[in-house]
Image (cartoon, rainbow, N blue to C red; front, top):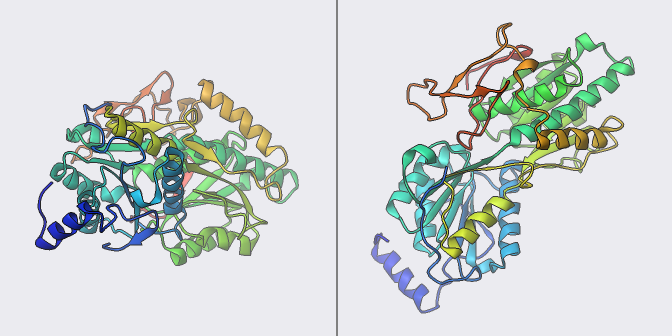
Length: 418
């Protein structure tokens, strides 16, 4: 590895004689502090001696980052990695701070380093090029399959299937409210708070909508954006505005408790993301979908320790337990929701249901039989890969990160500034 400063050299020497524990411990730190033929195993040999680093955009107050933090701790515990051999860095912005944190972890002896946010990608690639013996793994990125850096990897999961299931739960709740005479089917409108207009967000809100539409065909959905992954004030305000605009149920792709809290205060059903909000919202929380990152972390760390290749692009699925739903809150959900979700989940796993079945949506009034998606992240955002075949849009098959970016009928975008 490259020498970084006289101070760093002294630290490394101290670490070598046992006066400094190399990878810091399992406590969270903050701030500064297809396949590839990727790399060999950890120099020290076993899983009990491998050192692992985790980089998170926010901290435990973000449901998104908490999901990663919990998975990191669970994976390390399952693999028998002692707490002193892994470090979790929190509140690392999507900027040069990410590279600095990755380099610090590599210098400290970590041979596997994970980062959790879309904007971390270029800085993780920068670090991967500088430290070729370290595996750099990035969640939600898009460039590993085209970058050609052997020790840089992307991972995501078929969370669109989880969101579809959550949408089914939403549809069942809407139908229950319709049957109770609270509003008509034609008045069934949902609201959705998104962070940015990235394909990941578009794929998520579209799959959620299609799940609800499978139960209530007349349903429509208003979508608004905050321009931030985590902004409790903006998310709460957005949810309140959607409720005031006639939305009967709210969901989100944003990381704070802003929207769920607004729903609880207004008595409006809510489908959250990345974890249950039942403790704070016992009367309105229905269910949440989330990616379970534990299987991916275990796969990568074990492969590194064994000197085995690591996929450049890895997609977790329902079958790998990488896509999960929380327990249904029977106090808020429609009767029979849990049973219906098991039925639909089995159909998704067997392939008898496809989330983006082109028979179930239109774009500008027309059915889609062909679409060239921007899978290879062309700088000009030009479509490069045909992704509709056999009657459905093949999401997350040509790379792990989502690339569904169609604006389908029935979804109304209130703003697209982000």
